[in-house]
Amino acid sequence: MSYDPRPNASGDTLVLSRDPIRINFQLIQSRFDENHVDIDGAAGGGKHKFLQMPEQSSGPTVAANEGGLYVKANTYAGSGNTVASLFYRLESTGSEILLSGETAPTLAAEGQTFLAGGLLMKWGIVTPITNSTDITVTYSTAAGFTAFSAAPFSVQVTKNRAASLPGQTSVAIAVASNAAASFHILKGTETSGGGHSWRYMWLSVGPA
Image 1 (tube, helix red, strand yellow):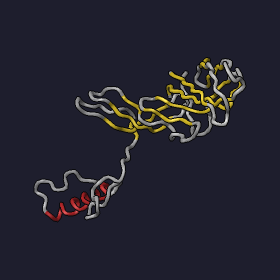
Image 2 (cartoon, rainbow, N blue to C red):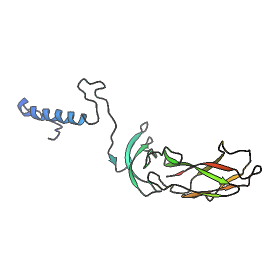
Image 3 (cartoon, helix red, strand yellow):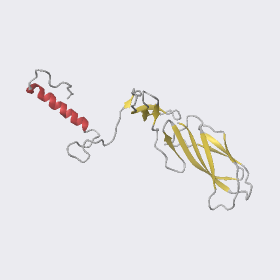
Image 4 (cartoon, rainbow, N blue to C red):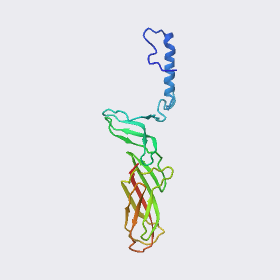
């Protein structure tokens, strides 16, 4: 069956137009049934069950006072993988804003999540570091993790002492050798009660 945009031409009798009209309604119903609640009296009838968008070859043209939400293939520079991704286009065919990443967020002590606009945020804990030992933090390359495509824009490190570790101390820390795959935590010598072990909680934000 195929849809007939003009099932009832001028001069056609009902006998000629009846089947094309019936086929048109059948096709409309079958298309409406895709991702919609049944229109025939069901609670929420006619509403979308979910939104399913085919991949576009390029971003759409958008007029003034409009915006465009669509799916398009995107290649993530950090991994080289190409994935169907969600985009939003600003009005007047403005900038395209990437809204989704290639993997799901990692809900763990060491993890990552995608941020709109093409950013990655990664975090983790290093434990323990004792005395004045420096350490290299290497970002995970396990399944579900996406590599930064370049050195992160920001790396923050917070020292955290476990409750079981006694004493108060002041420790100078710094971040060095910031790169796409790793960074260094430089740790100064403790000024009192030396030898305590610390946990270092880190957070990095950079390009996907």
